[in-house]
Image (cartoon, rainbow, N blue to C red; front, side, top):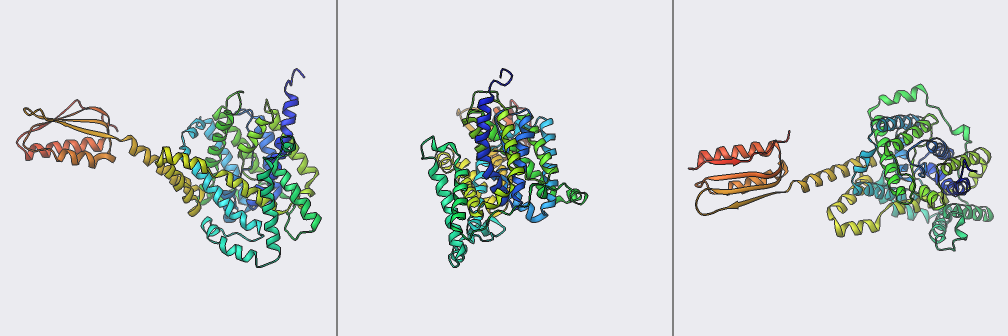
Amino acid sequence: MTKFPYLRQDFAASLVVFLVALPLCVGVAVASGVPAELGLVTGVVGGIVTGLLRGSSLQVSGPAAGLTVLVFEAVTEFGLATLGVIVLAAGLLQLAMGALRMGRWFRAISVAVVEGMLAGIGLVIIAGQLYAAAGLKAPASGVDKILGLPGAVFDAFGGTAAPVSLAVGAGTIAVMVGWKHLPKRARTVPGALAAVILATAVTLAFGLPVATVEVNGLFGSVRLPGADALGELADPAVLGTVLAFALIASAESLFSAAAVDRLHDGPRTRYDEELMAQGAGNAVCGVLGALPMTAVIVRSSANVAAGAKTKASRVLHGVWLLLFAALLPGALALIPLPALAGILIHAGWKLIPFRGVAALWRAHRGEALILVATAVAIVTVNMFEGVLIGLALSVAKTAWETSHVRLEVVDKGAGPLQAHLSGNATFLRLPKILDSLEALPQDRPIVVDVSGLHHLDHACRTALETWAERHSAAGTEPVRVTAPVKTAP
């Protein structure tokens, strides 16, 4: 026991994480349009492979709701056979980024963009899973999912099976919402697992006409990438999806690591090593043709709350998932699909930071607008381009805010006018600078003092010199520029 002083705590925590992860692994796989077993495969790899590697000691990895939309789009466009190649290439890219020590740079991504990404994903998940809860086929795009909901409600209540299916899904959500209000002893079983067990029991007891999970068998679902699938990497669209998988999975994992570090007093996350651990896990998942993985805050927080002390808890949770997939695969066939849809709707709702948006609007309206714009872009376009739009807006906002420049004119009556420029003179503020300078009288000598500038870019310097030449040529007195600063390249 001295060699493993925390074995009891880690063993107990691993069971809790396993019970939390099991329904989520299956639900994310089904929502992504792949066999349910592949979600368990990713959970096993996230526990055993990534869990053994260095980086974050208490963070737990597996299939995440945040990638559901992107995976579904990839499977729909390129097929299930190409998914493994995409995940493999994304994992190798993550390994390269970690080796180049790029992990820490993901911490520089605007929080508004990340929360906007999660909010957009949450909205698309909710809209799509509402169709699944009713036993209907969801439209492909996020906009069509949302706009088609009124018609879907009408279609659902026009039949006999759909209302029953909706009731099972709604009951699952109700159990999950109400579970946290039960006494602590009753909450030993995670709410998601309890909701799935109750939904399965009710469906079997009353013989309800609802769809259940299709079981293919663990070995029947695993597909090693073939030469034809590897050839798909020559397609620019596939490469774009690889980049999206790698960047979004990395950002979600490293932001989760920062959140988990705030929950415990143990060793801090080493971001570059954690990025390589995630890359190794995704590379293995790609070889097995499984779902991509990220670090998942729900499982990670459950791991910390359950008293885990070392990485043994997350490795053991992967072992339990493997034993379940190998020994009890038939149990998956009993799970009602609307129950899994209810779990994903609940997860999607939790991705939307309602309180965060309100607080951000009161303190930083520009950041709140970026959050909303990112979410809307993800719903209306797609996830990758929506994130790029959010990042572009964030960079533009930061550039605008940091390019403050002030022009103060001092007229002492006699002698030249004193024009003092201070702040950051960039091309973004060039119209303001020129308007102010051109408003100065042309029949007075002018001394432009730029010693107060922290930054003077090439565009502003050129414009300032051109204005000085024009003023000197048109007026009776010259312009002098004093204390020049170094021009930015």
